[in-house]
Image (cartoon, rainbow, N blue to C red; front, side):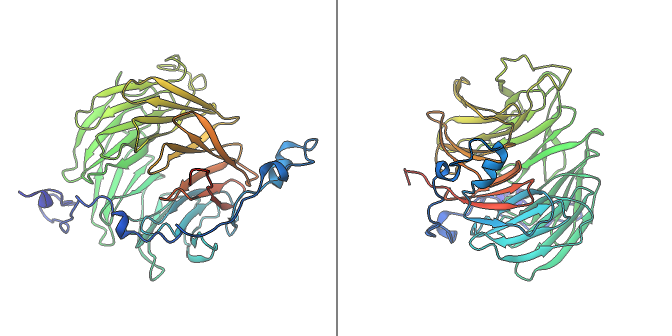
Length: 418
């Protein structure tokens, strides 16, 4: 059997083979991608010190509210904005989902709304583009998932599951995965709707990620277990549990560029490095020296909120609820830097081709850190509430943030080395 045939996703056992999908094309090459925003001059966001002059005696939040380093503010949402993602093909469109039961697709250059995703019954907590940017999926907390065709602005598919925990597109096919409160993971071929479920113990499937090969998905659960699923055959290849698993609910997952390693983070205060081929835990990271490990009281432990791999150096980043960003050396597993925030970190993202890692936190600021030195490169403010999610474009020239202040903002990321 050739590789292409082996990579086909079979959603109904032997009865029906969904179209043959070439899964070797996991990422479009740079030549195929339109870098629409690469040369846009977004101007100077100004000097933060100047903006805060004269406010020293005022309430700190008021002073921060006066400073806005953003290039553009998207304010169509009438409630907190929970999620944001950029279209992978051109990085010129953003989709945001909010507490107002809506998702909007809009242009990052001018904030113009391209499409409104309506008809949801609850807060839209998941919204993202398919691998080729032709489709947008939006999912609300109640479990109503809708898929929209960007070109025609039409809803082409919808489905209702239990309370939704996460939503993820396949990296190279029109296939959508979702994890729910009851522990099930669903997979659909869009728009045909052919469906497959991956059943597991009755506890939340709290996080999930399709590996770059497109054949496997990693799912983390509320009971601390991690499963690596074979998407074609529907079986769990590895189950990481007990001492190898976490002592609390999984909060986040990430994999390296080739999918050979994954990082898992949990409320137990630990991040674990797992070999996806063997299912073996090959590293454990905790800034508290292991004190939180196995702690029965979750409040005592310092929850891991976000994890990620650097693409160009053997470094990983682990973000904690206490505001610590820890940079570890992957080969020695030694802590290299602690980058301290005043408030809890919500999310981190490495730049695609540098050693810069960005963080957003509950204090409403976006920060860029140099992982080699541990130094803070820049800080961007403008939100009057916590940043709940953000994403950085491929060129690392723009960041788009989603906040509890009902706004999404576009920041121009300026650095001396660019």
